[in-house]
Image 1 (tube, rainbow over the protein chains, first blue to last red):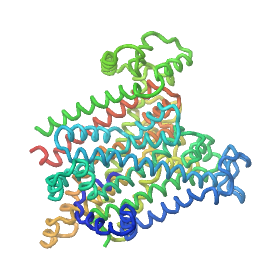
Image 2 (spheres, rainbow over the protein chains, first blue to last red):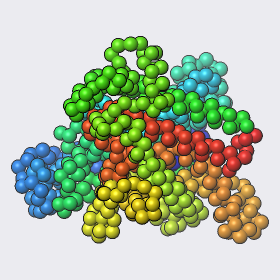
Image 3 (tube, rainbow over the protein chains, first blue to last red):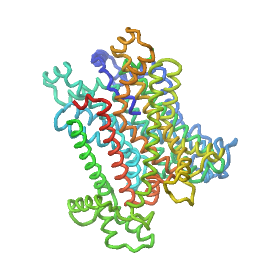
Image 4 (cartoon, chains in turn orange, blue):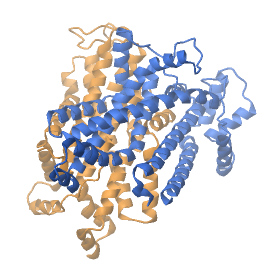
Length: 313
Length: 327
């Protein structure tokens, strides 16, 4: 995923902020207006549009899961190990649970982990990247070293070991573990962008007009990096969805959570493939892949926004 | 020369940091990994000698003694490859267990990386050169999809289709049970046959990094003035594509080798456990399911250090590819 942003894109025109201030007079709040415009721009990109549609569908399913699920995802009332049939569309688990209902409810966990770990990782990446990029010298050296160290330590083994040490495993444990191990790529891209923006005139003039450090960094520099922030968010979210599934598959999640990862875990424990229940393995894996792919597709749109050379003709 | 010196210094510093992180991790965790480890070891029925207790305490944190003293003992133990005993494999030392598994993972990860690099780069060059065409879209969409596929899931599906249904490959393990690993031709071919599925799974799921990286670089280079100049000179299309664009687009891709290697190593942990492949990843899975903390810590260290060494070697080779960095 990180490859998408490996090339630092040319900076966006610093005119974006001015437009926001003009429209400030209207009653619509600025962040909403901004989000709306970002959405419209993404929508115009073909790949991103497909991604947005898939994510939207998953979000819808997650919200209305209780309404559309035919059965309770945890009730053990059905014949165990049954193949797909009229009552149980995807068959049942070895404990007699309805897999189709579990799939619908599972969307909640994957989205929750993906989005919140993505947010947390992006927050860390923005903070470290901006400070390192804006403060050359010892601060930058130390932060860059930590970032590079986090980059070369393989995330999945570290994640597995962290999860193995932590005693009470909830979904939030996984969120923290994933966020802790996947902020570095974003931080590095953010740092290089911030350090090129630092010497631009509009930043210099803000500094000379006596603005405080926090204001210069977060109000002058950050708005010009929105596409990088968005792209690192979607990369981290993709990594989080995959990591959550992997940890749960290895049995490092909470086995009582209903999620795509735990469906796979139980399927593997009960040798679903050898007993011919391939739907139990196929469905959750495909759902994970679809969600991860849709985040990546959105990222294509974000990349095209920041790098005109990648734009579709 | 300055480049090499800087890389060596950075390598030493990173190795030190990784070793220290490995020391700090179990000490920062809630609960007492040492007590858990000792009680597990006792449960396997073996006598806990003072030496074993000391080795585990040094690795995971002693309840008494200064932190600095512990750190010094830890460094001494690592230098002598003393990682104590694990309770998953009570009859041998951790160093011995890891030493047996390491070659398997090195070969698997090494072969996969080279294969994925070549195929991914070629696909990326093709997609970048033909950007906007149907060929480009199919490569990009295919790579996007396989980047989102969980490696262990693809492994399970391949296992089901090719090994279980079609019987083309062995279902699990790194070699036919009963054979003793050696370097004879018959054993190597047996092992190679067992490695095809894990390697294929890993290669497919890590290919996309190279494809995207190369495609983006190609597109960026194609926008450069010297490409326009080459076109204006009437050079043949293939010359421009391969000698002018691809060659220059390749360089930034080599620097992202470290990141890609991380993905392969991470994927190998998941894939090896699906295939019960006798490498480090499967060992890590066994260690985690048994709460075998001594083995876990030693494995994290070995995985990190092997990655750092690989990245260091690539950094040094990079100087040959791009002599500008030496100046």
